[in-house]
Amino acid sequence: MDRYKITFARLQKEKRIGFCPFAVLGDPTPQQCLARIKKYLDVKPDFLELGIPFSDPIADGPIIQAADERALKNGMTPKKAIALVRKIRSVMVRQAHHDVPIGILTYSNIVFQYGIEKFYRDLKNAGADSILIADIPLEEVALFAQAAKKYKLHQIFLVSEYTDVKRLKQIEKFGSGFLYVVSVLGVTGIRQKLPPQLHKLIAHLKKHTKLPLVVGFGISQPQHLKQLKTAGANAAIVGSALVKTPTKNLSKILKRLSCAAPKP
Image (cartoon, rainbow, N blue to C red):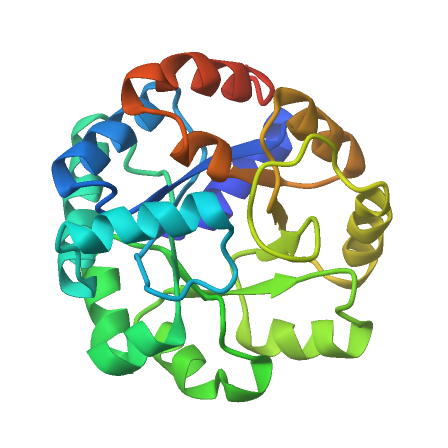
């Protein structure tokens, strides 16, 4: 079952944008992280994105970095993170969210140290659907993409306003599932406004790829999701705005964000 194809087809039929909340696995503890994910599931998200904590997350801003540090301080490891993914998938199945895709965000050193093929195999067995390795350039992705194909995981790539058509076509040879569109240059974090060139970027990408476009970096407000829907994006990832919110206060912000991507 390809959960991404099923979900994007449903979103297209319902004519709405998908909502994807992000969490750092093990932040601040596995138990508290699982409680956070259960809060996410209360609003029936279309996707989940989960980060494996890393000591040098170059694509992430201070909020996600702090979450990584909390998780690592409390003993989270890649092996434990994958075990937590398995628990999350089990909870999703029990709550009838079995069709929600789980995307994993990580960094190359984690995968190398774990063993590329073993890492992909274990992620797949845990119930993950995709993997994005934020610091692997396209020129060095072949071994990772081979493992992704073998274990039927989608290999996800970041694209930005500097991704030209030639490179986009090269990405399509290795990538599947969707393209992660970086809304702003720099690192993740909360922004008040989306850059005006983002609409132009989405329009450009839609002309040159059939892969769904999922926008991240800086998405933090309901109006951002509405603007992205108007621009033609297929889904939006909300990270820092949620990660900085204590679990006990999540319901309000989750409701506001999910209402910007209303279900029929």
